[in-house]
Length: 79
Image (cartoon, rainbow, N blue to C red; front, side):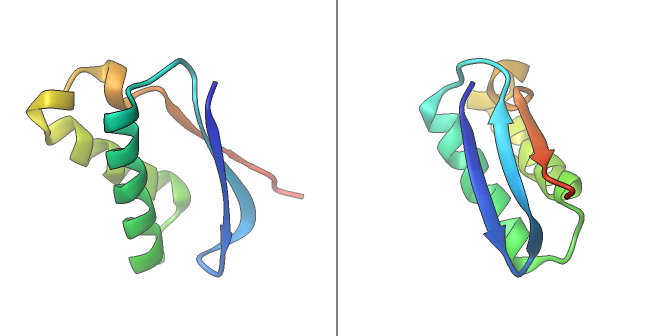
């Protein structure tokens, strides 16, 4: 499982975006780019930001198979 952790003014609680299985480096780089662009430019819930990034990956014919975009989950420390 791979994970990245983020905190910023847009994300007041620590956030981990993790994959449930090994994923393509190329599609993950693209997904993370979309994720952080949306996170920085919108005041949306983190789950919606991830959903939007996944939809952008899904629209790319090269990465439309669920293997490339469906492995990702959010883990948030609510404490």
